[in-house]
Image (tube, rainbow, N blue to C red; front, side, top):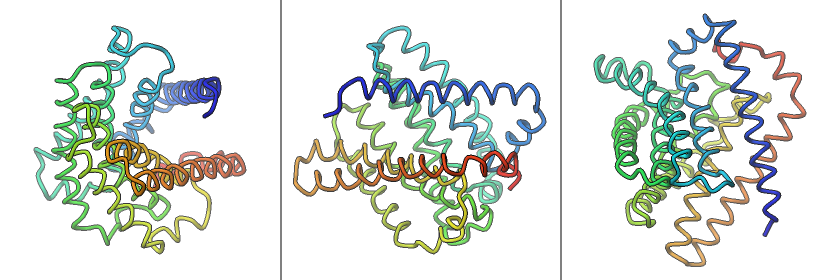
Length: 292
């Protein structure tokens, strides 16, 4: 219902924001290499290195220009996906070679960002027509998601290895199956039984989290940039609900889609407003967020 200029404006704002942040982090790599190295070796920090590549892939997928299935689209996809695969080799290789004891020690909710990176790459590859590559990334992501899900599920009530201020990242529990639902939707071409099952799993995990507000009580006492972890999972689940509503075409499905989309938009705008109002706090935080 909105004019196309609005979408175009928001897309370019997102592109400008991501480009500036990427440039600033590139400068950090040159002038503060030791801190970047510390992030790479940190059990939590290394998972956030997937975030910029996930963002670039999502921005590429939503491009307003007719790039799909062109060589330019495929080259950009390759540029943004290669770092994800390199990080996969580092993280998954450690899990595989060092065994269960190592994984149970380092695994935390942010580890699901690695899975989401593979699933986003699979979805974008399917859109550009690279179905075999999409299947490869989907299989890689889902195999490690199962291992990670079981590991985290068994220690779900503890969360002692994660700082209190980062507890909003528990919402990534339902972001991964939601993204998997969308990825398989793009690969298969229909919102089939597999996509529905993954969507239902994300709904269950979302309900399990929102029914336990005490888990997030301490993290919500003071504004923190980690609050943005609420936005992405809700948005992805809302997108998955749109595919489900289109396939099922029932009043309940459409009602669920509207509720999830409204919640996603409200949370995103609320976080944007809170971020603007607390800019000074964010600048004073410096690197304390990475020190945990």
